[in-house]
Image 1 (cartoon, one colour):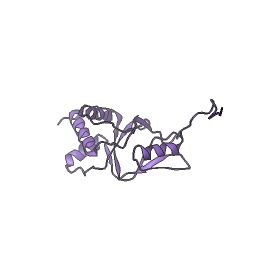
Image 2 (spheres, rainbow, N blue to C red):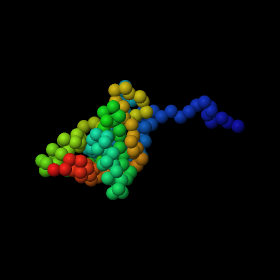
Image 3 (spheres, rainbow, N blue to C red):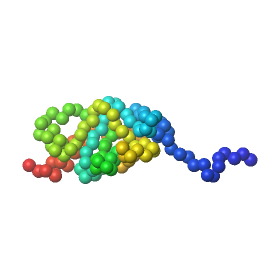
Length: 159
């Protein structure tokens, strides 16, 4: 009889294994910083919409009601923000009134730059968690997430 592993040996997830999951299962173009264990990806193929947690909860509810799922959402507990990972179909927001409403609500549309993802390595400077984990290559339309945010902001701040 051969022994395949010690009962005290447990599987430990690493930044590299998490990055591979993000790449293979979720089609996210991630990379690991070997010095810090941080997992990031360049926006472009994937975009993001970041907003305060209270607004994001209402946006998530609105998207859930529409049947938009699964929603990959990253939480930033220290900053009180959530980031929705979205398809890169985000058009420039043309109407100045909508830009102002999103700005006032602290909604940030990320079309380029780095997006940090949760890593199994603790990092006191960059805490990221999954509110709703990425489990597949599906991402909602960025335009739909922004439109839903505008609808929620409109309800909150009627003219």
